[in-house]
Structures are given as structure tokens and as C-alpha cells.
Image 1: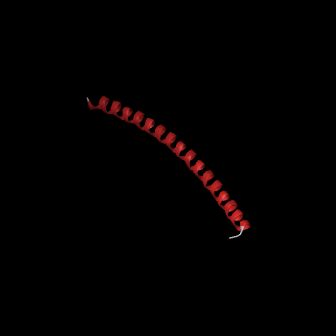
Image 2: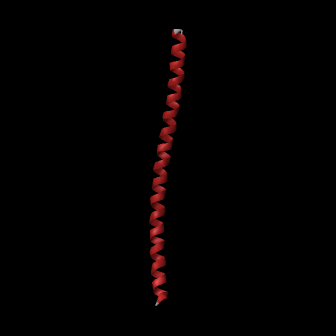
Length: 61
């Protein structure tokens, strides 16, 4: 194996690792966004469930 070949392989591997790091960071940000959306949906769901219970109890009697 020639020194130049090793250097080229290292350069290519470094570039690939940088790309993987970018993808992982993007994925992490997307996961955070999805967690936020999930929390908002759960809060809305809880609010709507309470409204349904309130309306149901009004017309039950």
C-alpha cells in the first residue's frame, strides 16, 4: 500500500464520517421536533377529552 493511497482513503473516510455526522444531527433535530409535536398533540387530545366528558355529563342527566 502506498502512502498516497492511504492518505486518499483517510480523506474519503473523513468525508464520509462528516456526512454521517450531518445526517445524525439532522435526524436528532427532527426527533426533537417530533417530540414537541407529540406533546402538543397529547395536550390537545387531553383538552378535547375533557370537553367530551363535560358535554357528555351535561346531557347525561
